[in-house]
Amino acid sequence: MQKLSRLFAAAGVGVLALMAGTASAAPIVISSTVDQSGYSDLQNQPVYPLTATHYDFTGQGYGSMTAINSLTVTLELNDGNTGAGEFDENKLTLGLDGIDTGIKLNGFLGGQIITLDVTGNPALAAALLSALQADGQLVGTIIDADPTNGPQGDLLGVPRLVTTTLEIDGTVRDNGGGNPVPLPAAVLVAPLGAGIAGGFARRFRKAK
Image 1: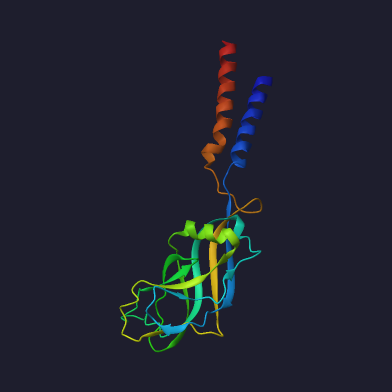
Image 2: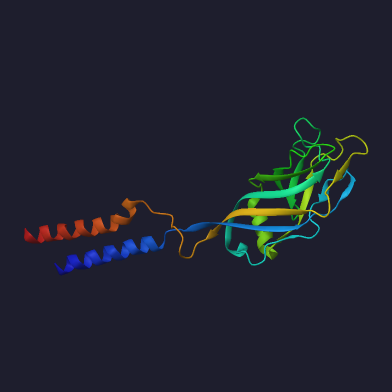
């Protein structure tokens, strides 16, 4: 009986070890609002400045992030020409620290000043996370996949005296207080079951 008690105790320790080793994670959302660049010139370059300074996420827990899941950028463009059927549709994308996120800045109509929220899952998310964690800052740009496809003399405006906001939706390590990722129940009870079965087998052989 004493041996069986020890087996129960060992099995319990195994279960606790498995539970302690379960991965845990929690969502995190960080954001930064800064002035737009005020760029207003010919649209004939591969990259245009979006932010006057950099998006700054100081003190928002970016250092513990393990993944970036999605981005939402709010910006205002003049004569973007990325509306349905316009020549720059699917051509302008959001750049951050020189990384092309692949998030298309569509819906900014030609000849109009338009403000939109644009959300997407970024390409090169791991590189983007590394850039963010290097200094907590990201410089915003507009990347033009084909700066020569528009009419000669076409302009692009990133109006000044308005702001742009970048919101980052990610995952952060949860060191307590979060909901752990559960292990299957069969994995948790397996050591306990093995201990019980072994104990009864030894008692049966001894009785014989």
